[in-house]
Length: 269
Image (cartoon, rainbow, N blue to C red; front, side):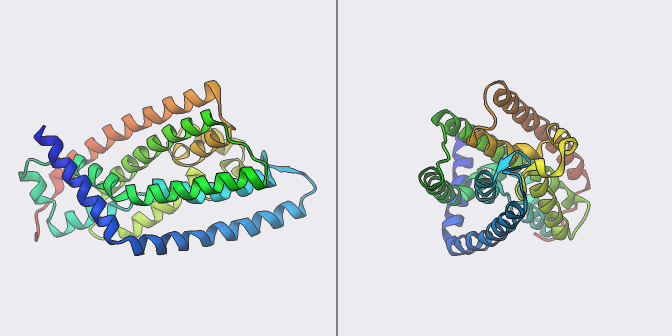
């Protein structure tokens, strides 16, 4: 079980790093609240100007609830490790992983979950308070089965988003300064995942395309499972698609990194 001990240590190191930078996390959480409040005012104005009670299949209360949940879940699934990978490749630190008995993918995965755990637990606590408030003050109900299914889909969403950005981070083998590109890709994926607006806002055809691509299954899908908009056969179909994309992105990541390793030049380090 020596291999397990290695990656347990990677997990613990990531966990300790998260605790060391807890003030930075709290500040980032506060800054994430601004877009939520801006969207709340935006949707309030839109619904007040509309003569219809429902827009894009959401009532006003459902839309506001979606906005708050999307802001929190986007923070839960967010990666950030791609900048560390860029630095490893650029500085030559990646070389040690090529000669030591430590798999880089497994190391990054363990470190990622260790680094995310404290923040994820805190955000889940905030989400619990939010759901309780929505239930008490707005009368929105959340079934226990939906909550349990949501936790499963959320775990898969975190894994899927990790693999998406692990694939994206392979660009570091081809482009030296790629940080700006990471940020652009992150913004696009947040939009496509439903992290800003519900996907229904962009039209039925757009939703049909997103049903096939993996991005929806990192934010929009878990939210709709939690709120009960997705149940039964559709729920299991979504879980299957999540698992399928996890497998496909894992295969793609291995392929990209094999090609990238051939281009790697150990400079510095």
